[in-house]
Every structure is written in C-alpha cells, then in structure tokens.
Image 1 (cartoon, rainbow, N blue to C red):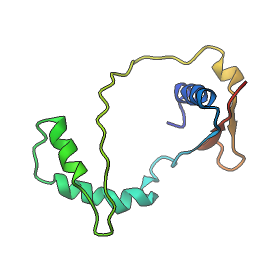
Image 2 (cartoon, helix red, strand yellow; image 1 turned 120 degrees about the horizontal axis):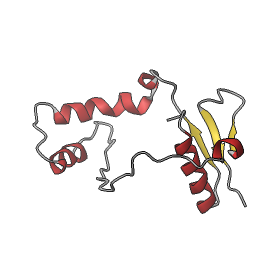
Image 3 (cartoon, one colour; image 1 turned 60 degrees about the horizontal axis):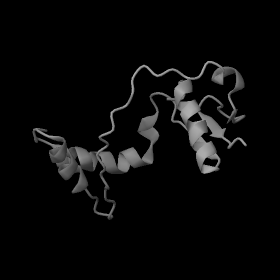
Image 4 (cartoon, rainbow, N blue to C red; image 1 turned 180 degrees about the horizontal axis):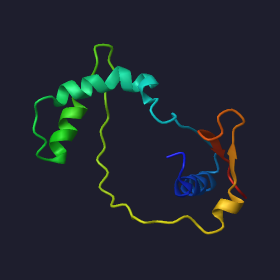
Length: 117
C-alpha cells in the first residue's frame, strides 16, 4: 500500500541488498479498473473458475494455471506458503530518515528506493 511505512522500509532494504534503484507506481484507490492487465486477463481467470467449488489451494492453482487468452497470454502460478508475521512495526527512526525519494508528479503514489551505501 502507498500509505504504509513498513512496505517502504522493506523496499529500501531490498534496494540496498540488490544494489538497484526500485521505482514504485501505485494505482490510486478505486482506479485499478484502468489497469490494462486486469481488463485483459482477469475475465478469463474468472471464467475458468466459474461454477467450481474451491476445495483446495491445488484446485485453484490448476484452474488458474490452465487459463489463457486467444492471443496467447498465459499464467504462471506460484503458491506462497510462507507465513507472514503480523503486527510488524517499522523502525522508530525510519519515518524521520526515510531515504525514499518521492516524485514531483503524484508523490503519494510514485516513489523510488535508491540503494544506500
């Protein structure tokens, strides 16, 4: 989410570890309808899952992985079985020293994490 500092802190750690600048561009709330990927592909995923009872994660994975479009767009499905820690807090000083660079145009949704030395 564009509002959460924990994401930005993890993003900065990733940029530092990789030594690469990472640019983020969020869709503002309620505008994902303009995302061309969602419009091109999600109807096909919905159709593949129509009328099926999801009795296991494997059933869902199989259905979604078989989804494709007439133009050849296909899916690659990976099941993440990692258990994520809840209630994490960002470091106390991160908000004050946040090295994230916000763009001049729509800074709330567009920003970069530049590797720190």
